[in-house]
Length: 455
Ligand SMILES: [Ca+2]
Ligand SMILES: [Ca+2]
Ligand SMILES: [Ca+2]
Image (cartoon, rainbow, N blue to C red; front, side, top):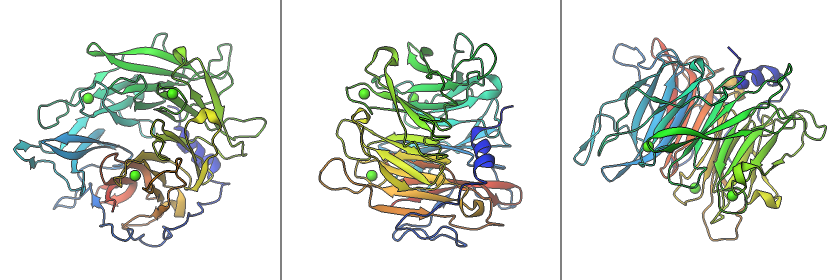
């Protein structure tokens, strides 16, 4: 089984990069307990031991987290899916979009919500299983998309139910790409709107081969819902000489009207600069994504693009902006359109292991959160950048309100608990979700997911 990219980088790179330098405005997260910002309530916890001290969701709860807003019975809820190692299950929670309170088993008006949902996984490979959410079949219900690397496939749990949301225990599975991928498949995946229609597309990366006679760059297989099933409607081959595609995102980043595709190659040497990293931008207005260019700050050992994301951060009415995090404590925010060589804002944001964008403070501008579970001897931190509302000029400057969050509680040794392993800014709600996958829970479990209500 191939070692996951992040842990390879962790072992190779954490040894010689300095520990995170902290941004302005926040308390140091390295104390015993980092206080929640003024005006915020203590976060809700999703993993609670029962009366006998037993943790219900086993170990490494929060190793994957995905969340989306949905409407049930006229109320906005956040649907939160959390992966757990040893149970090989995805736990699905319904949370009040305003307060973060658990709604499972309750009711909204006359609509009853079903008790807690556990989705059985056909396989779960630690460190390799990736989970995302999006609406792939255009019914306004968020679906759960999970990689099945052991089976070389991707599973989709399609939400259903009238009134309340439910999830089937048996997923539908993507068709295999043809020809079959040469290397590890799926390696990574993303869900987002790429075709410009209502539903989301699924992008799945396949590793190429770097040696032997058949040198083949990584590929991105794009899947779309059509006539009741998902089809691999397009495949993009990464540029010759590119390395591992680490992260990918979709949105309208480039001039024109069609959504575009961004893929990152953080180990790329760029113009002789070792491990600078680069992000390729594929223009959705060109036939079959045949036109692309790349951006890079060309800084040695920075691993630009270790995580990327897209959001309406800077206030453009038409375009979305690109965020590219590095493993050298910085995140770059490029105002769209990217083809006009924009000057990025550069934020102090730790060594990114996860990155999320979404509006959580109600001003319709995307907020940014970067998770760094490696800082403070592995206690971890999350860097939160809230948009500033106000009139144009566009683009807006760097978000003014920023916080550095650390673990809100310490249970057992604080080193290595990994706060910030996964982060989610649940767009259109007030909820910020941060996992600490190795914090002890109960007598037998580990992994906590904290739900913050942004105030
Ligand atoms: Ca759906
Ligand atoms: Ca475009
Ligand atoms: Ca916002």
